[in-house]
Amino acid sequence: MMASPFSAAPAFDPRHLLDNYPVVRSRSPTEACEMVGRVFSPHRLDVRGSTRGFATRHNRIAMQHTALNVLSYGSEVVIDPGERGDFYLMQLPLSGRARLVCAGQEVNIDTDSLAVLHPHMPTRMLWSEDCTMLLLQVPRTALQVCGDELGVRNPRFALAQSRSRPAIGAWCQVAVDLAHNLDRFGAHWLKHPLAYSAMENFLMHGLATLLQAEDESALDAAQRAVPLHAASQSRCVQRARDYMHCHAHEPLFLHDIARAACVSPRTLEAAFRRIYQQ
Image 1 (tube, rainbow, N blue to C red):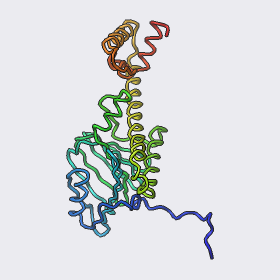
Image 2: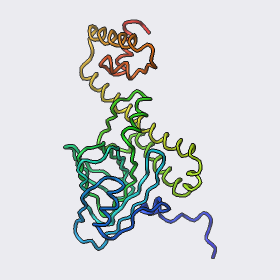
Image 3: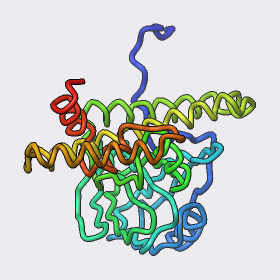
Image 4: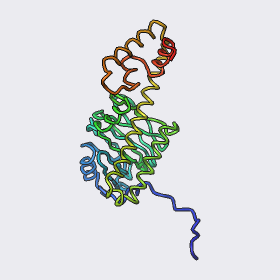
């Protein structure tokens, strides 16, 4: 009997995402640790319990600056890279869960979460045996360039974010969709550098935009906790004016002006409206 074209597709095993771009296939923890370490950074890998189900599967597709990775171990593992390299690592669990300890913080993440590891931050991770991660490597300098274009200096992400936040969920879905697209059509896209460069830029600018939103949110929260009085508003406006005069020959961004004024963009706009009615 011929299958109906409308039959439900079989459930997709996330371990096989980017299978067209294999890097590591190993049942040896020692070998897997060494091979995965060449891609990310040297680390220690300890298997919890029996190694019977251990089967490292690492797929990777590199673009101009960044790389998408899919990594699973098949066993519960502890990963201790110490101080990592000079890159951000965005972690999107596609299945399973993980516990991350980084710079004194500890969080649990799962398929409803996104985690971001900052460059050179001491890190330790515990992955469940069914954990499969989509990992985006972004060099610090590459993300800094995107941040500069949007007025975000020294990008700082919270260790973990909920994908229930529309901005986070939207970016995560784009990353997953792009991984599926590259898995199927990567050979085509990689023939057209401008095309995959545009994909990469979209991912990175999306990240920088999230950083900008998070940064402004933190600044706004601080401003709400300590409202500015009229005298403080006048001082922040004067600092903003001084900054604009000193940098009149350069492209000016609201975020930079607000930083120079030591307030959030929203607070600076409100101060200008109060003082100048515009």
